[in-house]
Amino acid sequence: MLRPLSLRLQLTLALMLTGLAVVVTVGGVAYLELQRKFSSQAAQQATAHFRAGVASYLQEFGSFESGKARGVGLGDYLARLRGPDAKGAGPASSDGPPRPWDVRRGPPPGHSGEPRPGPGPQPWPAPDGRDDPGRRPGPPPDGPPPAGPGARPPFRFILTDANYRVLLGAGSYPQGEALPEAQRALAEAVRVDGEIRAYVSTEGVLSPGQDDLAYLAAMRQALLVGAIAATVLAALLGLLLGSGLSARLRRLTQAVRRMHAGELLQRVDARGSAEIEALALAFNHMSEALARSDAELRASHATISSQALQLKELSIRDALTGLYNRRHFDESVRQLFEDSRRHGQDLTLVLADIDWFKRINDQYSHAVGDEVLRRVAALLERQLGGARLLARYGGEEFVMALPQTPLHEAADVCERLRASVAAEDWGQLAPRLQVSLSMGLAADPAAASAAALLEQADAQLYRAKDAGRNRVCHA
Ligand SMILES: Nc1nc2c(ncn2[C@@H]2O[C@H](COP(=O)(O)OP(=O)(O)OP(=O)(O)O)[C@@H](O)[C@H]2O)c(=O)[nH]1
Image 1 (cartoon, rainbow, N blue to C red):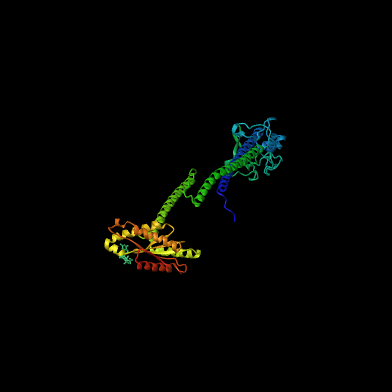
Image 2: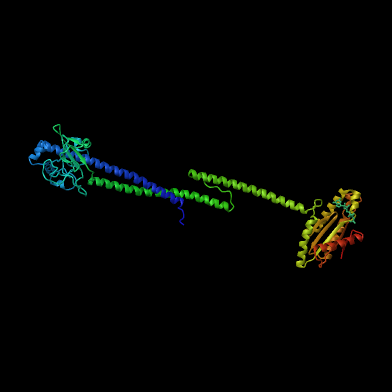
């Protein structure tokens, strides 16, 4: 399938065609008008010359009949006046006697008074013997005009006497009959001594003469040069406008691509034609709005993410002590257990329980009990370090997982914890307050699961309680 033409090419072609059409239309009309003007001017001149020839004949012979009686027909008379050089083509010259039929540019002789003398082509055909009022044989008056430059013009003259009786009918009107009314209106009077002696009118169209042909050829050439110049100018203009337009569209396209790549805030130059400026401004506004929305979206996404993190943290923390809660411990210890088993590493689980906590509550209040829970939790967390998992397991019970820690090492750690709790100055919190921890440890490598291991630790805790509390027990 053919690709659609680019905007630049379309614009160039449109301008070229428009320029060409304007030149051809204007030039063509001017050319035709000029041709018509030549034809009309030549017809006027030819009629004037013919009329002058007829007037001269009548002046000399008095009438067509007396001319004929003296053996001189109008055709012969005109031919004699015309002279031998009139047969050929060529421009009129100033040599020789003046003759009334020379066709020249400028006002016709009938308009300026006297006919202009000079040799030149005869503007009318010599009448034949049939039509000639002078009865002399001659070339046919109504034959087709000879072709070629300088040939006699194709006018055919109609000649009547003063009463509109046709003497020369130009093949259209029979000799001797009255000229129709319509044709009479076009006829021009031939006056001799102020008296109307005949009427003359013209039929036919002009084959332009050499000067006219030269004019028309120059006109055609100017038309051709104008058309070529207009086409070239239009092409240059089209290319210039088109390249400006396509450059702006290219910048817009590049900006859209950058937006697609993530750089939402883009600005393109808004200068240009009204449409391009409107498009660029709309694009800039859209880009700003998108960039603003994107920034707001990112900010709200960050807020939501942080809130989700906070929520998640809250969901896995114990509200009173800030330690992890039991649910989180149970989820995490499963992973620790599997990892230690997979890598053949030690894992010791510890359950720790505050001794006689009910009594603390009862004796000192729940608030004191809560504060004891918070202080024991902080102490355990501080001394245990980050590599171990510590959680409040429920009530006054805490649980610990010590990865990569063999039982005896874990027992030492727990012993230090127990001692620290016991050595704390609890009297600051409440008079004569004593707090201690009982702890049970399990690190059985044969335990099937973290829960099973935890049960073993719980059993050791019971042993510690049973043994008098404030102690660490393990298998
Ligand atoms: N202040 C306070 N008390 C709690 C909280 N959770 C559980 N307790 C109390 O802890 C007490 C636990 O008592 P017991 O299970 O009898 O255990 P004990 O008194 O510590 O006795 P032994 O464990 O055998 O030494 C109960 O009275 C609970 O009400 C808490 O969050 N705050």
